[in-house]
Length: 239
Picture 1: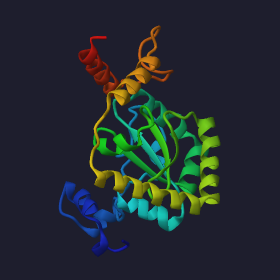
Picture 2 (picture 1 turned 120 degrees about the vertical axis):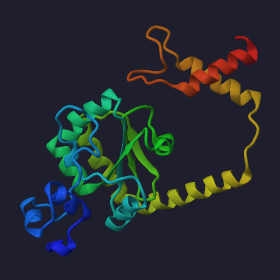
Picture 3 (picture 1 turned 45 degrees about the horizontal axis):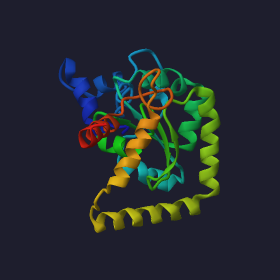
Picture 4 (picture 1 turned 60 degrees about the horizontal axis):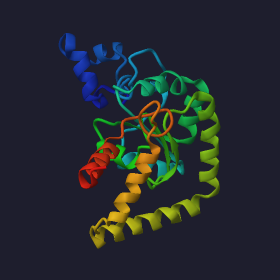
């Protein structure tokens, strides 16, 4: 908006903060275009360059852009309380090469876990941060948790090349997955048999680390569902 009439509401509000609004005052503030917030997608309290990535909010617009541009989506699931999310901001998302590659080859989307637990429930890769590469249809191509800068610069071209070389196949699989989910939802919920419960309990027990605690290998995160299941198993059998 290069004219006073096209100025954003934000700009008018800022210009009028110290008195009545005038186009001259607004020009001095150089605020004709509403700015992208430096803090909206910024999770680490320490200096970093993560805001240089052209993050979008989760929503239909981001995936529409991905489809129109023919690019995969980079989904970053973060939280303000997450140490490794801060580290990701300060390392990988502050690396010049990573920033440039993401902005050119992906549609980057950032989600605050605490604001969108539904997105976290579907795409979390086992902890925070979650780094998920998605098709424009929202299906998972690949993913991990924290990815160091050098590993990130190796992973991104591989994912993009795979997407570019197998786009039709990926889109067809996305259609099949949606159909399967729709069929499962329409069929209603089944009944969990004792064999299924015992099998999952066995997997959880086998994943427990008796030396250092927790489940699986580092990095470890709380698995509340697993703990709930173990307590249920104890109440059920006394074991």
